[in-house]
Length: 526
Image (cartoon, rainbow, N blue to C red; front, side):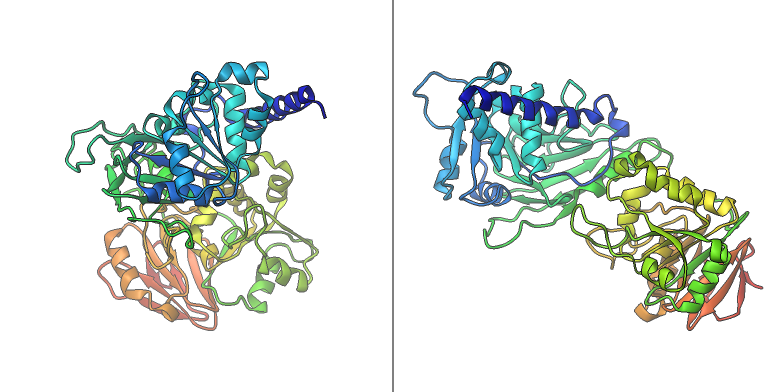
């Protein structure tokens, strides 16, 4: 391949990447999707960043032997190495290449050796004067390619600000809904600009670095305290948290997980809408159809057989949603309900899954299965995964349509918890925390209730009772393992081996076993 053909190949590849990244062009900040990022970003407060910040960048870029490019300012020949190139080499990096290129070099072909180095890099660090490349169509596409192949982008001070800032072209930001602020002196009481509504503000002291990695994990390294904030807006209170940096980074360990990036994006987004939860939710009543709220740890055949009968028997068209389960990126979680329902003779059963809310909106085939479904089952796992995937998509409305057609929707464990209106156990970092401010809204198929699972088996009663006292407008329902609440109209009937407990503020919980019925609106045993 000649040098000219190599250059052309680089340009064509970059333009193709630019076309892909342009899918979000024109979307306002209010519409930016809250989802995990590709690759990793390391954002330093200044060139004084500690060794831990450099070390974590090296780690996220694939290690000291992987190719790293430092994009420095255009300079006369013989210019000295940049400060970060020197630091990277001092920390053991053996494949650091310093490039001094600008937008004109990319547009005109430039030095094909330099362009190929950029195209194959696993890590790219931008110095201040190189940030013009972020506004260049080809330059931004090449940097997006680094993230797409699991690499890392880094920058300090103004370069970090530019990496986070949304470009003037309207192309998708590398770190959506975010702004980066490099504090001048790191003082906690320093007056500063308030965050913009709908945007997450990340503040980092001069010698510290913020790392966003593994899709959604955020940690910091260096002296001082980094902070994350969202603004008060439309009745929502402002919220902030400290991110206490680790003093050093051990290359033998994985980067830390101090706060969750997607959760803070969700907090910023929800402050652009009405305050939740509402003071007066709709009463817990189904106009049509039925719900099966299962507490987890094994759905017995009799429950699934009753579910199938309600969905139409031999003519049932079932959709199983395993999205609460864990899976490697790009992989589909395993669905136990799909296997069980097939084994029970269900001939028309499909699996619906998407980890990207934009992907599910583009997947007409999957949406069509929901539009035709007579029954839907949501598997267990973690509630936040369901809400991240589907909350701001067509899926909640399509699930409600299943009920409106007289169909049935069921769920076990997390699949049960997401069917109410107020959500529990949404913290992406742990399922031991009952409430998380970014994950309070469930799918809402049964309004006016908050649902928890594995109830008596995990001694969740005392904490749950306090939650109901805090939100007395919601009826609290705790479902035991191997047990379900079958809901039709405004009546819940207990089925299965154990019990369901109902909580009304100011009263002790009412625990019912198989066959017992509860009036959900009147909040009394029927």
